[in-house]
Length: 268
Length: 178
Image 1: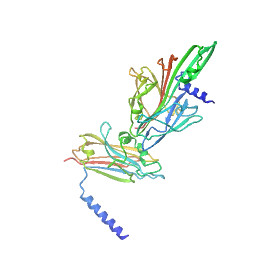
Image 2: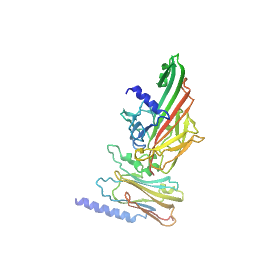
Image 3: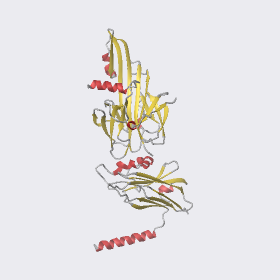
Image 4: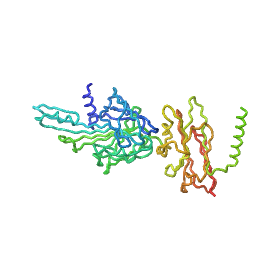
């Protein structure tokens, strides 16, 4: 399996394609930590079941980790396995780390001499790939964000401010301050602006041990906000996707956006 | 050897005298750590704090944890296992905290005494509060007890609660303010 094929695969998977039901996720070993330098280890995978690795690893090319100070930091011991990727992160600062894999991609299709051609790759490679005599050119941009949050000591908010690109979650309740029996409010933004009418799916992990997905479907209100009532402690996966035409690639006419987060809900 | 014993007896006598002379504390908390018969026993981490009616921690009384260095650093790594305490207070503290943190304690009854002039109590506005005691034990369980009380006490207040597994009897005695 070549690198480019895997990359393409990751891009497909990271997209909100309705025909593609696989879930993309990061799963930290724990989210609430203490000590001078605790470490978390994070799994990254693509699968139908939460949170089991049995399909594809998630590539770590787009890994972006923001430390509590707002500085970008690097993961350690990155490894891509058969079914999952893994990396470690020492939490040298007190506060909240935002751990994300951001995939920026482009799809294109065009015709040359009556023949249909396709492209899938990074926006950079796109321009070189389309010949000047191409006709019926259609370009779609894609931005997918897969993220999770971990905190050493008291939760902080510096690192979890929206970057202003694609779909992002603005946690009105801190993402590392979620407890069973409580209700959490979130806001979804697209390019930093509140997004109304987005559909959110929330699924608790451990799907292998129950008969149904038991997905909660929620919709953002006019302020882009929605609330989740956590019935039980556990790891939860939250996902949404949308489309618009606010593209950053010149040739692109539409943009597909996706977002997935893994959140830990603690017992009281 | 003889000298040692003499010192010990003398020490006990002095301690006893000091105890007899000591006035009854304004606030007394006893926490019983039960004897648990398991092959791998570790002393529990125990935290006690006062919360207001909104469950906000308003005073930290104690946290007992492993303060000595180990291969994984001092025992601060496991403090979040005291999960209510961690959420309400612990995560915002820089450990150790003077007058609050100390080493883990063995099974038995432990008494904590406070004067009502203790800044942690003196600053409390009159109202309804709870004493919360939480214990968490490595390779064991976790338990939390809540003892509601009124501050300051008009009459003698005696509260008690009993844990099922990780905590024994916890009592709170508040002398009326004169």
